[in-house]
Length: 309
Ligand SMILES: NC(=O)c1ccc[n+]([C@@H]2O[C@H](COP(=O)([O-])OP(=O)(O)OC[C@H]3O[C@@H](n4cnc5c(N)ncnc54)[C@H](OP(=O)(O)O)[C@@H]3O)[C@@H](O)[C@H]2O)c1
Image (tube, rainbow, N blue to C red; front, side, top):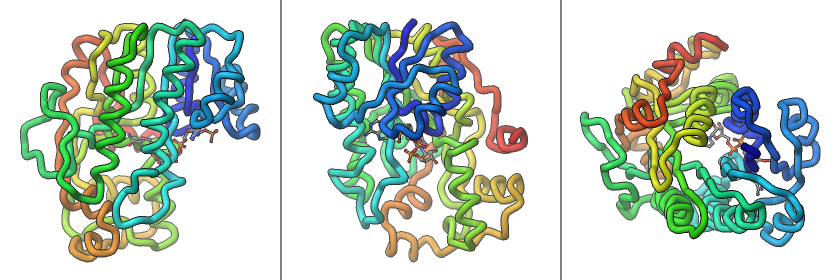
């Protein structure tokens, strides 16, 4: 298939270009920043300059092109401004809402019939989900009036748009938290090298993770074998606490000792981080993806994935 990929130069986009081309697909890489054109080419894609949030410019840049599928992986987490709660105009939220709408228009222009959108397991809600692994049958889009509600709302909006769009087969990919090159593990290692606090004292909540290489492989499997209208949970086999994650990152990247703060202080200073690291606990089942996509993570745990850097 010829695939238009938004977010092609990001933490998942880079391994995804390689995984798509290795599996016989060709990639048109949307690259906003011209400096990244060489990177997209080096990875095996044809770069196209456009901003996903500028609908008219996006459609102009794609005029006369054809594609079979669109994959939306554009996020802007690093562009988020520190705030007590995630705002309605959060950059990644806008990419999930307006960005998805614009890319659906792009899909129509390109004649693309398949559309994969990045979603996130945190859309199940920022609270303690207990011991039972969450499946796609659990309610997605649970709000608690807290600092993270806009993240949930944006994930739901992204998913609903692709499921409701006429003329395209929409699939949502509910990834676990990303680690691996360019992802959260590097972010945490950088913080520890700067002796900045990285998490709560105590274990913190449990979460499910996925190595970016495994996320890329799962995405190709969903492109090739995913059922239209479905959301797929995509995480490794070993949910871990934040303390375990931070300890693994510190050990594998040989950083200084992690500095942790009391959970109450994190909740007070940065409520969103408190909601994420102290108040949310979720174990994710990816059984549907194992069965339907015939995908299994190469790295069953964060410890295994970080060992191969
Ligand atoms: N499931 C998860 O846990 C998850 C999901 C996403 C991100 N993250 C994490 O967040 C961290 C950084 O993420 P990030 O989102 O800042 O960066 P990133 O993943 O490194 O890159 C974001 C990608 O989106 C593209 N993009 C952003 N805004 C765009 C726009 N308006 N139009 C077109 N393309 C656009 C960027 O393209 P340009 O080259 O044009 O800038 C880039 O390719 C990483 O640690 C990553 O692991 C985690």
